[in-house]
Image 1 (cartoon, helix red, strand yellow):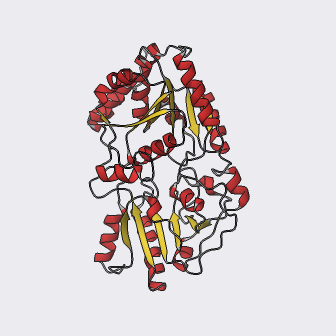
Image 2 (cartoon, helix red, strand yellow):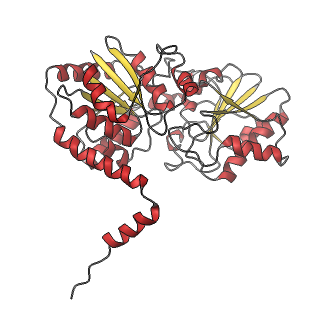
Length: 397
């Protein structure tokens, strides 16, 4: 059975490659699609580290050639491991093929909160991959509201490999490295971002010989899944130049997260999925709660976990580990074959031509995609003027 995964960014490529690695009995092929957030060669290498494709070249597909390339390979399943608008195009392209494959999507990390807009992009999908029972229930509820007849299946994040992390991991006698994992979207306020950097610097000053590292996913000028307006590298440079942080107190690191999550280290984040990778290794972990715990900050899932903490805790080197109850309910459920079986059944149905004909629906979705792309190319003043005219109340005589 043949499965093609189409990714558009570093984080989605990492998830796709690890997911494909866990599928036995499939001819699996990861592709990159050419978009403005396409990862660089270094980002690709970091994403593929530790997978079957670590030293191989991943095909780069032009968006205009996607349907043709899919028709040549004729996959039984297409995994759209991409951001919403690209998922919409991948599904529309695949749905128009003579041999219609099963259409699958998912998210590369913590997927809560479940949002209606994201499900609308995935309207043509047969299967959506969630990573916990909490996520499954949330996405099923959103799918019902959107009237999207998609099956939601739970599969562990493939980067999490431990059967169940120790429920009371004893912190190292000395934490020699604190790794901060940024999230591009939150917190958005540059002042709050500076507060995080200052707390990291305070930890380094109080612990001679220890390191404080901001582990970034891209170098200046490179793209990520989500655009980051105020980068930590730029903010750190400014704080050092003004003397608020010493030259060597906080450094910036880049590379696979696995290189940074080593014994003796602890991880800090506001909401990054890197927290789960840290927990998976039994490392002390802290979710910053100073700016709130909410769906908007993408960290509500960690409420009740036992690892919420403050920047004062970061500065003092106080880190925790989740409770066993939280681990079992969130992302660390026992690994099983649900995803493999669901993909196998979907592939079989595709081969037997048992999947519904989506060509008409695909044309509608493609028109929506084209309108969205035109919108992104149109200056904002023109869009606002158009909306004022379109939605102006009609006065009746």
